[in-house]
Image 1 (cartoon, rainbow, N blue to C red):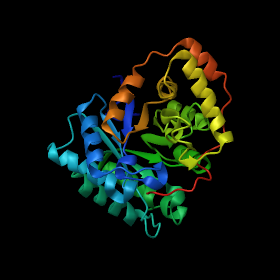
Image 2 (cartoon, rainbow, N blue to C red):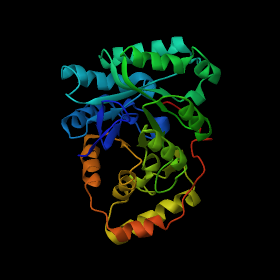
Image 3 (cartoon, helix red, strand yellow):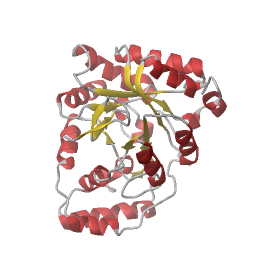
Length: 320
């Protein structure tokens, strides 16, 4: 599997990264539950495979995602050699507080749950949902504390992971991040993150493109999962998905393979983050990534219209 430098850091990551939000059991977001044994089996399959990159967060499943990953790390005596684990600092889930003290509390909670002394890649997560953005951006706030963690070696690299491009782009331009995570905004359905990706590519900031399946619908299908970007979708909203499905069917290609290939083929994307919640999805992702996609398929898919509005701007976010 191809590996790329993570921005200007010494970390090398595979072009695929597995996302662990669903492994924390988040039925409000995904519409289904994931029990502990299924989650642990999936994490083991990830560690046994060729992908060296796993992304989680303190708030996913109110801590369950990190705790389940930590359980597998402990049973193996530590992270696999060369493995890059990414997690995220989060606001206080009860109060929304996200000041420098909360940053320290969040990272200590993560280190405890994961059983690690340091985090390879640590992001500031979802500042738009905090109680006061000034707690984050002011001098001595959460952002300054994030960069202190990098200076102290508690994090090897730091990034920003959030929705709402109108807030994200100015923060990226104003701060020395090593990486960004953007989700749902660079897919076969939506290209609203294009400008952000171009800036990061030129600035040597690693781009981690998450949710290329638009929350799962491009992988599971509009009939099985009638939700787009984690929200129930009308037939009108599902019509672009069905057009993609028809084109892929004509070419004998799984829509999920095309959706994944769309992200993997873009030189601005360092790694594509794929959420998985069962072991067989790990192998399916590897198979889709290895699928040869004909030029004619891309001609037809590239001719389809796509959205440029930010699908995260008005999404009702629930961390469960």
